[in-house]
Length: 392
Image (cartoon, rainbow, N blue to C red; front, side, top):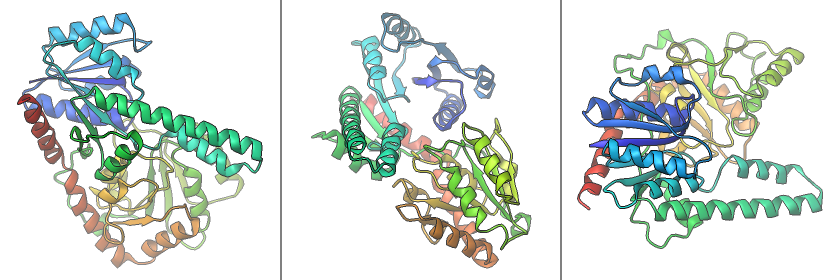
């Protein structure tokens, strides 16, 4: 079987890119012929993480162009591609280009939405603007822009669904919002396959004595999506009460400097900014006790299952429904309610920081829950899908 991943930026950092690498390597290991085509090759040195049999192809911008249609058609014919896994299915022009290249060949498109159907960065940005303004004219403008953007999103979802053999979302809960927004009449091509655990730690054995009093954040420092400012503000309420604990922040982004200045100005102790890591920060997972996420926008949250696989107890803001697939609230972690409440976040952190027995019990549950996302289980779901489509 011959598989082509179609993705915007690759090789590159990011959740979708990491999942693409992990799945591509796993398929190659099973004997599939795997190729990856991307429109931008941002961090080419990351290609060393790929199996040596995997082929990389470069497309270009603009996405929908005669050149790309021609080049993709050559790849599909030369590599005898059975399935294109479209990892960049919004907006629709990628699917439009892909189908123009496929024509009447045997090749089928499987589109994968690596986000929430009715929520994206632009929509969240407008929602934040709506909340922040008290000017009635400006408010009316933002509400209109939000409605237009939501309608555009709905059209794109419906178009891509129509021209895909199957359409994959990351959570069962996303199927309902997809159907509601896109208004599709027949959802038979819609299904759920979650993201796999992207780090290999089968030999990890949980030892409570190896854990340190560390609250960990891993991700971009981007105010619009990740809201790391909330983590700093919660810690501001805690560091004097728990002087033997520390907050470790791993990642870079446009707001890192602002956050560092805030910590310095407010004289907040116990905060460590570690910067971006090319590899998963497994050493930090292994010794951290708590993971905190306060994002306004997540599609899946790979960092959650990574950390849980090292028995790190998550405290996560329930801004997206897929988190309930990953964390069992009050058992394998805490999910705080919408809208965001700093008070609730601080209380949940205090509960874990003050109670090592409860923390230990939830750590064991977190580790156990992470096993639901083992690579082998996710691969099996993909292979069932391939077999189903091969019979049609």
